[in-house]
Length: 161
Ligand SMILES: NC(=O)c1ccc[n+]([C@@H]2O[C@H](COP(=O)([O-])OP(=O)(O)OC[C@H]3O[C@@H](n4cnc5c(N)ncnc54)[C@H](OP(=O)(O)O)[C@@H]3O)[C@@H](O)[C@H]2O)c1
Image (cartoon, rainbow, N blue to C red; front, side, top):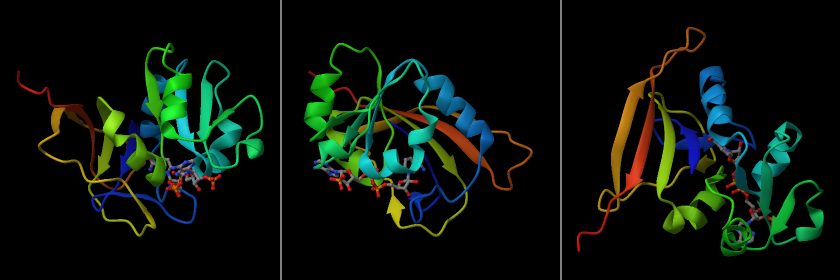
């Protein structure tokens, strides 16, 4: 999974991301380029013009006929994962509803965390510390941005045998 969130786990407001952080968009494109991306119908509607040509896009929706090609529709997160099981790295890209559905299946979460509380109507789920550990963290730098932020990577904890 990959997302950028505020201090209050804010992710979206009225269909949009409530900030502009170019360096995060860059890292997002570097990571997902050439891979399979799974997203909810609301996120797809917001970003459907920006699909990189080498990526496969799977949109989770109850209304599969509403998804135009080249994106493809899945009617559950399980169906989306089944459709991408031979695709190598798969990135779940949101939004809030789809992150909740995908959380039990995720191994790694790339989370850019901004040290500022934003007004939002969509939030990233809390990570259970019994299940997730911070594996990597580094400060981000972007002269155009007013708040500190970190690029964090969380990994699912291994169950001890
Ligand atoms: N900050 C970030 O990194 C980031 C990343 C992505 C998105 N966002 C923001 O997040 C917001 C969108 O998130 P969201 O939570 O509103 O929507 P979403 O997760 O993108 O999509 C929700 C839609 O997914 C479909 N869906 C949900 N559960 C389903 C299920 N069990 N089976 C089949 N389909 C299902 C439904 O589509 P149908 O109604 O078509 O059935 C539902 O309306 C926007 O503000 C966006 O800008 C932020």
